[in-house]
Image 1 (cartoon, rainbow, N blue to C red):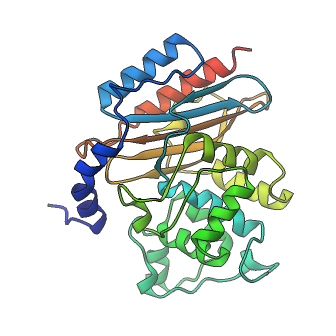
Image 2: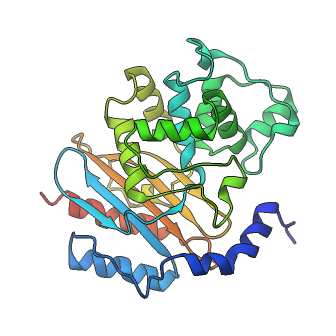
Length: 300
């Protein structure tokens, strides 16, 4: 039997409370403003999987947008890590350091957070990774120890919230670190429209300097945690720069920008929550919604 982690205990204890605070798919079915077919499909997914789906998708080169519960709040989860890596790459630091990405990071075993073991393995083997390697592992592997270290370099949760606002994200609110920020019912949340708007500006706008924008895009293009989510729904030849998040209370997120072979950019921001602790968050719903959304957004 797998030992229960602190996050598992918290998730189980908060399950009934979460059910009282989440919008019920059966009672509220906000239109996407796209097509009746898409509305029906998303509503059916919510009913079938007992999940609340928040979606904001947009053709960034001009055109249509799709919104379903786009301004409702969901747990932020590990999606914050893309902001942290981008901020560090862009020199949004407590102490200015032009060579920060080249610095070696020495952390004690006590700094290790729950989750992926990339940093823990390096500590055990006596290897001190560079900050650039830490950024890459934060985004591509969702290593929580790495994410916490990047937040410490930029000044903590308040600094991350300020960075989100600078990106045009008016919704993201982070008050805790890993692993506490994943606690069901916590104030560490965002909305599909809010974080989606922030990611779109971060990856395609001018909020970052060119070197930092190039780095965060490359790191996110190499993300390994969304193979069964958005990436599974992309047409052949497309590229995706994204960041996922997962919670033990059956919450799951995926936010990013997809590029078609002809260079057109499309924002996909999908956040979900459920009180069914027995579900593995039905990864396929991300692929389905991504595919349906892109079909509509390309219909110019």
